[in-house]
Image (cartoon, rainbow, N blue to C red; front, side, top):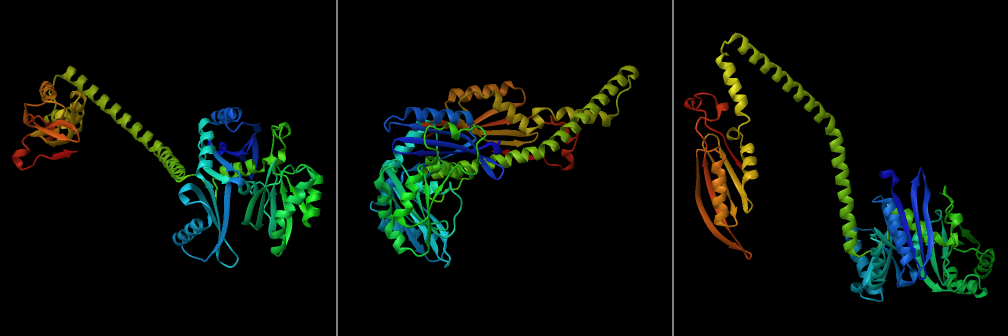
Amino acid sequence: MFWNKLGIGIDCGDDIWRIVALRAAGAGYEVTYAAAFVVDQEQPVEAISALEALLHATGAQHRIAMALPASGCTFKTASLPPGKLADLLQVIQFEAEHQFPLPLQELSWGFSLSPEPSGRQHAVIVGARLSLVDEHLAMLRQANAVPFALLPAPVAAREAIARTEGIYLVVSVGAHWSDLCLYEDDRLLACRSIMAGNPETDEWAERIARELRPWIVGTEGLQQLLVLGLESQKSGVALAHACGLPVTACDPWQGLHDSQGLVSKLEDQPAAFAAAIGLAKMALHQQAGINLLPQQFKTAARQQRQLAWIYSILLCALLLLAPVAYNTNHTLQAKQADLAKLNHKVQRARQHNGTPLHPAMEAAQQILLALYEPAGRPLELLRLLSAQLPAGITLTDFTYDREKTAVLHGRADSNAVLAEAASIITSTKVFDDVMLNFSSLVKEKGQQGYDFQITCTLPAGADSTLGTGKKAHGILPRKRTIQ
């Protein structure tokens, strides 16, 4: 069901995989799965098995978003003038070619655009090595999973906290690496990842403050610092003292409904799941501004979405047409029942009275019977031939001239098969004569066959639907061509 779809977020760190599955619950979200796995990057067997089991349990009703570590990504920003999207794309590609440290052929890159108060467009361009992207996608393939989006971890983590206005800093804390981001409203102004070490050490706050100081000094109106993944209040106080800014420790689980108590069962720190939660939300709504998936994955995902819409439209059409089809079928059955009763009455009348029917009634009865004969119905005749022709015969053209001829064009694998086909057509006893007009050898693309034409003569006067003597009054036979 559409309302049971899950958004699955997978945050693949250097040594820990964090997986979160969310389901829409009214205006909020419900947690249906949450787990962390300490993995060996060479063989993350446990995490892959758990992911495969989760996907199997949810069937096709899920969307997956995956995160790349910010330490493996390059972030660039640019302020672009207003313009058409096609023109902006050219400028963005130019910026990427000249600002990224590697050629674009070696990168998988994406971007997002957001309006600035001045009317210009703020562009965030992110690139990652193709080798890093392939490594993460290879791990997902082992679990038979295909993501719809691949995003930098700090961008995904930002989706796990409430919207904030003004200029502020976001620090996503990790066991070894910490991601630092500068925001104005929802616009990412700058992002970098540093190896700050364990946040419980005394030096951690000083390292973070030293990296943030250029932004703090050079940015007017900087209001606060938001921290994700920080468990110790002591570390938060030390960071606030070192930076001279108020520090707010954000809870990424806030506002999520956890009816199964999954958060309390986590062995890993709950605050470290910010990126996985943000990924699950983005997957559920299919929102990914910066998507680092290679182009072939994006094309496949777009085609799948289009196919899903087509299936939905067809389903709605079937539901709308079902009552019409039912009523039509019911009416047809009623008419057939009336006809059967009438035929039964006619037969009883003949048995009791012995009086011959009126000529008009006999003609009408002959017409009804003729409607079911192959000679009077080109589609029935074509169905009869298609069902009985041997393997190795392919019909390409079928021309039907009522009460005259039926002409068959096609290709045969061999003359022996063609002779067998002519014999079978003759044995149907539908035609007065069956003639093989020609059989020509054709060679093309390393294959050969025999193009043929067979003319079948229909019995004259066999079609009672035309009426007796109508040809003499100038009524021409109808000709149909089926290709």
